[in-house]
Image (cartoon, rainbow, N blue to C red; front, side, top):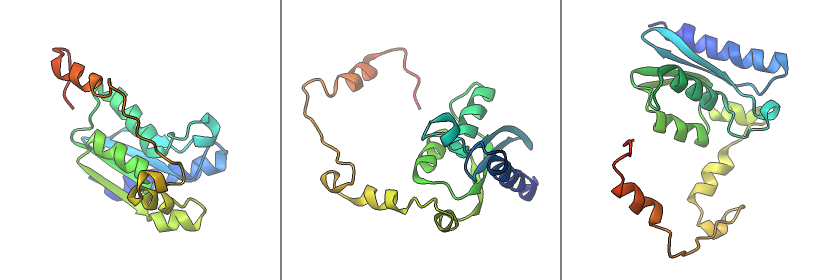
Length: 156
């Protein structure tokens, strides 16, 4: 497995994204059995989708290509250490490995600082910059109870 070549492809995608004006400086590649099955670039501003990070885009495309919601036996290569959102998506997708080039501190130096999100996670809900309010509705557990009873669930 040529990890350097796949990681370089992720970096090349990030550079292409910037040069073409289609997004931010992030790229991702997903590989299975030594073959690229999906690529993603950051296109948050061009798609008006704050979740359109390179890793999330690549995960969506790879899952579509595989016809599965998990990336078993896949490797993710990303031009930069994943942000908290992408980290969550990666864990839900369950690739076997992740390789990255730049660190999140490098992204912060270029104006893509996600440290505030890490800080927000540790705060109480009422102390966050965007306050979160728990409301105690009687039906709050109904979706989970319905899930537990259904025969049509797909465990993940």
